[in-house]
Image 1 (spheres, rainbow, N blue to C red):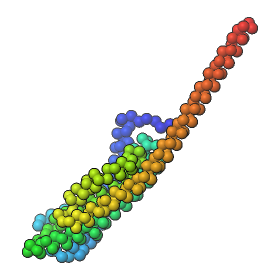
Image 2: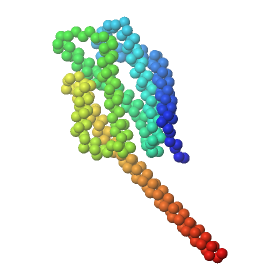
Image 3: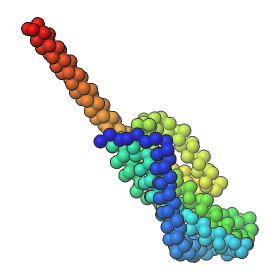
Length: 280
């Protein structure tokens, strides 16, 4: 069945409907966040790292600000699969059938990798960073008086970027799957990619060698994993492209045969008309 081309107004109308759907799910996720936020805050408060500190509220609104920050993050995480699906559904008409199936299958992996990035940064990186700051404060004979709002803000700034950085394999696989990125190019650009990841790790991690390595090494591993899985995606792209070209060639040959048959039939019809005219 031929897909009908949509006008600009129809595209905007479809986009509005999909954004409205995402907004509804986000509001529902925020309502769920009201019930989830308090257990999450208490879990973080009673972690080993927080237990070594006395968390203070320097403003009457600090607890409320933390509460809504957690609610917003919970709502974003819970509604992200819906957001990704609506985005996929919006761009789906512009994709080939194989690309539609491939990109739809990425959504669960994006969600799981985001959670994996959060888990890695919270359970591995964050404790090491806190130990480093404690040891530095002790060496400098500094008594830390930390506000609870500052503590949670520092935690979110350290952990949330890893949720997005862990999307690297999926992004590169997608680009390879649609033929935009060649894995061989990724291999050639490895040193530049490592430098960019090293700079990103320097921004995220505290200025200390071990913590920098804790951030950098997983990013390098993610890049190498991305190269491996991108080869699989690129081979599928080449196979799909070859199949598409073969099907296009068969259609062109069939069209030429139809045109030839039509020309022969027209020539025979013209010949019959001439014979009939001669007989008269």
